[in-house]
Image (cartoon, rainbow, N blue to C red; front, side):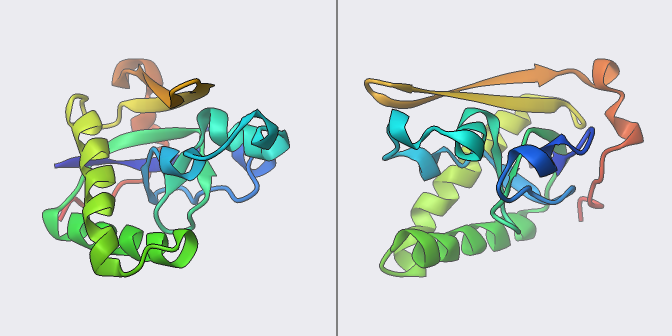
Length: 158
């Protein structure tokens, strides 16, 4: 199984996001945060988070790029629990049990996105508001182009 970790190619995320994700933390799209946003919400750093920020699963901060990395199934289950707890604490889900299915769906979507790419592939997200809600698209930078092995922080995959 694969998922994505936050990666910083420079210090710009510290300046463009209210709360930047930490290098190496697991990430997912996090578009759910913007499900009820309107154009009026898209100002300053909030606009930047909406436009191209991945959602970190430790800090719940944002990052511009993620790198595809291996993930152990046990670690996946822990991330599902952590995201379900976040849904309770920040979005008012009635319980972790009730939020677990949605949290797992979010993480499975991210895992499917990552599975299609070799390890170390960089991925960027782009969002826009449409009449039908938030639309996301993804762009990748291949390993040879990115030379990511020199700067990526990865787990051991165990």
